[in-house]
Structure formats: C-alpha cells, structure tokens
Image (cartoon, rainbow, N blue to C red; front, side, top):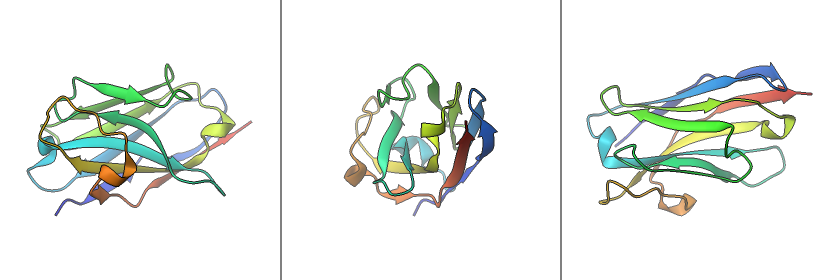
Length: 127
C-alpha cells in the first residue's frame, strides 16, 4: 500500500509560481511511475504531467508545457511540480498519483493505469 500526501497549493496571482510536493510512504517509491493530475470545477480530471520511475523521462500536457516542471527525488520518496507563469485557467485541485510499471523509463499518461492517489491540494490563480 502506498500513501500519497500533496502539499504546496495556495492562492496566487496570475504570473506567480508555486511548487507542489507529493510525499510517499513506504520504501518502494522508485518502483512507481508518478503523475500529476488536475480537476477544475465542473470539469473532468485531466493529466498534467508525468515522470518515469528513474526520473529521466517526463511528459506534459500541451497547456502546461514550458511552464511546469515535474521532478522526483527517489531518496526522499517525493515528487514535485514546479509551476511558473501561472494562469487563471490553471486553477484546479491537483492530485498526485503512483502507477505500477516494470519499465523504468516509461511515463504513464493514462489515468486508469494509476493505482494510488493522494487527496489533492487546491491551486487558485486570480487574474
């Protein structure tokens, strides 16, 4: 069983930056591909960014590419999402997720492939 706890959300103005963290329990963090998803009010949850088990491969949704950076520290069992140049349309509840994969270089983008989810952290960007 893996427990994920997000932190770092908040209320900021457009153009500001935030750094989200996702702390994982257990000693198998490096066994999981990790991802950040987000859900805006009235919308379905969507993939934002993903990172492979090794951390060497990443993938981003087009709307966040160039502004968000996903990273992980397997020694600290923690994943991060650095969000720069935030826009009001980035307002959402952000979730981290862990997915089993044998391939250390694979990035998982499909929500159904993720096994464990955190409770999420709210990010609100004002215009």
